[in-house]
Length: 89
Image 1: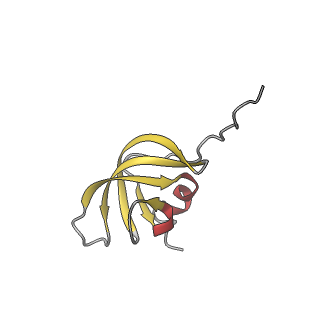
Image 2: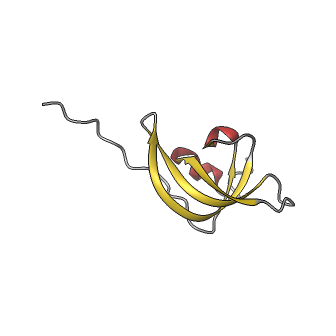
Image 3: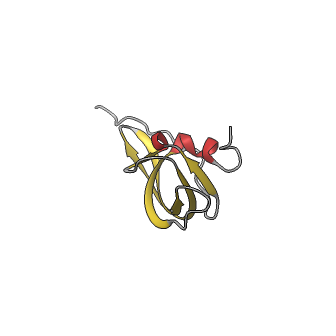
């Protein structure tokens, strides 16, 4: 009998209200860097056997941009370094 591959737990769940500074490789289905303020954490999903957080967030390109509500898939391993102010590295 072959057992399914074990999935590692997803690290560092985003917290509602926190701001993430995401680079293009940190999230799916978008282009360019984003500043995202998390409004809801939907679930963790797996793409290519890697955990990604499905979130709803208020997104903008620059601090002065009014932004819009979007659904994002954020790479789980990118969340710790994307947290504000640690994102300014």
